[in-house]
Length: 359
Image (cartoon, rainbow, N blue to C red; front, side, top):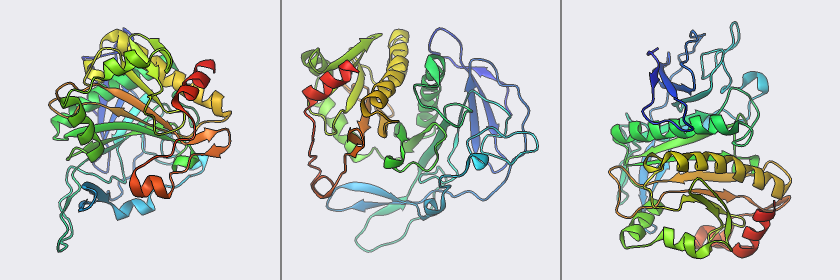
């Protein structure tokens, strides 16, 4: 276990500390918090760990998709007593986090699709394939088994953002060319662990969707201008220079984007005030969705930042895609959406913005 270090970038005017621990099975675990983490290590297991899968190129779509058969057997909705993201208690079963308490933890995924040591891929005539190199990490927001980005509170969301900036820098340095922090929330999205958490994927190749966004910004697309034009009709609000708005081109009913009004490449590039505004909105958007849909709302959220080394004119966003179109009604991505990429949107963006403002 390393000595605690203070992160060079904090959020909220209070230092954030990191302590690193190599688990018994070889994976790295990072503990983040407002105070140095000094608790002793509890029991650990040393199971065999998958070393990633492979990627194959889709010749008609131009995509590289990942194949990781070992993920078929990943942990699936365990009981509360077997929660792998809970702290390990003295005399209790070993969990992923071998400490009796923590604030926020990030560790290498036991069932990683991408891995820095991936070294094999099938040889298929006419199909390009490569080892799925990269990184997959799990971000555990809190030791409590229930909660959300809202319930963990402002301070913990600030610690989360400081930790994500630290992981961006570390994964870029490790050779990842694109880093995507994200959260899947709700059974409708396919969540297999209900303990509040997110994930981070580090890609060796920039994914196709992000390549297209990078190209659009390089070609001069002005998101700051779009936000200025869309507000206030499509705006939810603004805090710390970060706007929350429904894109006029939204693909999901009630889709929300967060973005600094001034162009930034990623959270590492934001001002202290903007990071505090971002921390506010991560909780506030969650609150509004839960109130609007009258239940813990199934959502897919991700940070869209510039790739390693930066990119001309890139504008950082956090994008929320809800999987509901009304209380109790799913937004299914069915044949047309899946086969053509043409989304059928059931709620007009201007109506969605008005409804979200009123929540």
